[in-house]
Structure formats: C-alpha cells, structure tokens
Length: 296
Ligand code: SF4
Image: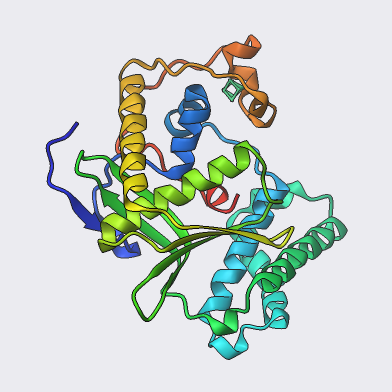
C-alpha cells in the first residue's frame, strides 16, 4: 500500500487532459476481477476488442438523451422533447463510432431499434418527471483516493442534491430488472459511487437509486457509514489482489454461467484456449471504463 495522505478530486475534462493519470479502480473493472480475474486481464491489461451489442449501444444512446434532456430548461423536459432528441443523438454517436453501424441490417433494423430506445425513454418518464428535478450533475466523472492510496474512478449517471444538502445517486439501467448476480453487481456499483461521494463530500449519500427503464421499476437503498467502511476495505482488498496478479501475470479463469457472455472464450484455458503472452502491467491506466460499460 502507498503511504499517501488522503485527498479528493472531482476530475473535469481539462484536468483529465493535462494530468498524469494514475492506475485506478473503476466499478466495472472491479466487478470483472471479482467475476473472473482472467476476464479482467483481457479487458484491462490486454485491452482486447469486444463486439459491441445492440442493447449496450441502445443503453449508451438513452443515457446520452437523458443527459441532454437535463441540459434543457426544466419546463422543456417533456416525453415528446426526449423522443425528438433520439435521432440526432444517434446520428452523432454513430458518426463517432462507425463500427456501431455494422450491428444493423439496414435502415429498418435501425428504426426498430430506435423504437425500442423510445420505449426505454417512456419507461423513464413512467418513473419520474424530470421537470420537477434540478440535478447537480449528469454523467459526472468522479475520482477519489482512499487513505490506503487506492484510487477510485468512475462516472455517475446523475447526482441530485436536496436544498438541505442530502445527496442522491441515480443510475439508469436500460436492461430489465436483474435478478441474483445482476442485482448484486448493480448494488456493488452503487456502493462504489457512495464511497467515492462520501470521501469527496464528507457525507454519506442519503440514497442510492437504480432506475430500471425497461420494466419501469426502481430500487432505492440507503447506505450507512459502517457499511461503506467495510465496503472500502473490500475495494482495497480487490485492488491489492489485482496488483499481485498484475506483477506476475497470474490472472486465473473463473468459469461460471457468465462465460456465455464472454467475448474471449476462444482464448480462455477453461475452454481449451490459449491466452496471448502476458504484456505486463499497463502504465499508466488500467481499469478505465468504456462508454458501453457505463450504460449497461
Ligand atoms: S470464458 Fe469465462 S472463465 Fe474464461 S475468461 Fe471469459 S469469463 Fe473468464
């Protein structure tokens, strides 16, 4: 562990461009390591490309539309306005990521997929009225260093702060309400953000709220300080385990039914594959989340 004084930073685009970035733990990569150390290696160390999937890209699109919606004056945040934002937002995203266009069989396929995205926006409006909210931030990049020196970094979909100062962390989920593993993974992510915000602002967030847009359900959870302290120790243990594996390259496969969703099965020894030669611990920044991670 590093012997550094605790510090907190809210990163912005400028500091991101100029700062020397240190290795950090993100919620998605921490979940990967917990699920399967070799999956973590493939994603964060080898950085092997993965095939984007339509539902993930749709989640990214819906997140981007909701972000733009909250940039409008409150009175304009209607369902109609949100639907109007869909096409131009998709236009912009698909210009930035032309590979996403390859997922579609033609304009009809895109239109059908956009209509699914529209249903997710309707699901959002069934859960709350954005005209009554004034979030402090959307798609907020946050970073904080724990006393142990572990750097935590991630993106929060939305941060609501009441006039009394109470903080609510909101995360949109574009898939159906998960069961078992999915729900545990979502709660892990939310506790991660709760720890980061607690360290940044000095107060435990009052509520963590997960909004499942496709089935119009939401889950609310109130963390407490003792729990977040324990969770901090869990994150420190995960990071130390990653660093140990990173030194030697000993990232072991941990097969589960989630292997069905793994893009790297063909390289996995658990399925008679051969991983590429270990490239060594990456500098400066393993653990970064992709835009698709953030919208799952
Ligand atoms: S196939 Fe399964 S065990 Fe192998 S790397 Fe992927 S998640 Fe891990």
